[in-house]
Image 1: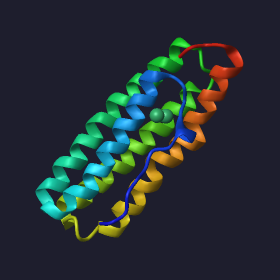
Image 2: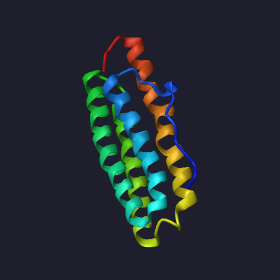
Image 3: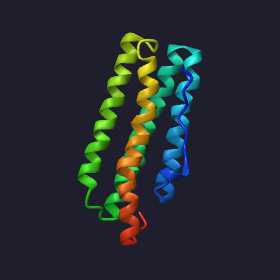
Image 4: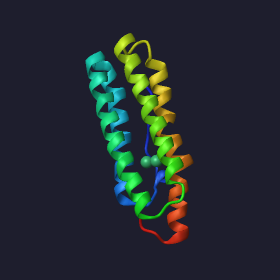
Amino acid sequence: MTQQVTWNDDLLVNVSEIDNDHRKLFDLMDGIFSSATHGAAAVNTAIGQLATYTREHFSREQASMARSSYPLLGDHTYEHEHLVFQLESLINRLMVEGPDAVDAELAQFLMSWLGDHIVAWDMKYAAYLRETGHTG
Ligand SMILES: [Fe+2]
Ligand SMILES: [Fe+2]
């Protein structure tokens, strides 16, 4: 795996708790790419860390949305559940088929998995906060 996922300021939600989480998630994804050279166990450990931190992040983000009376909280929560399901499916395949079998898919998946969600969904929340003056 040679591809990398990179953070950039276009992904800022402007809630420090959420932005710090997003940076950390990008770091964890990067860790998966670098773990690939260390074999299947290292990949499994790295992706397990990503799954755990992702769940924690989604809880924190949803709590922020609840505090800010965000009207799309229900839809957003559903999207989060879908992302967790996708990641868990991939982890199951990794366990069964080994990292080589999902190598290209994993890189592509991770590139779009979180980045696309932040752009499509978390940015909507950022716009809501700007418009309403809620601080998240
Ligand atoms: Fe989100
Ligand atoms: Fe997020």
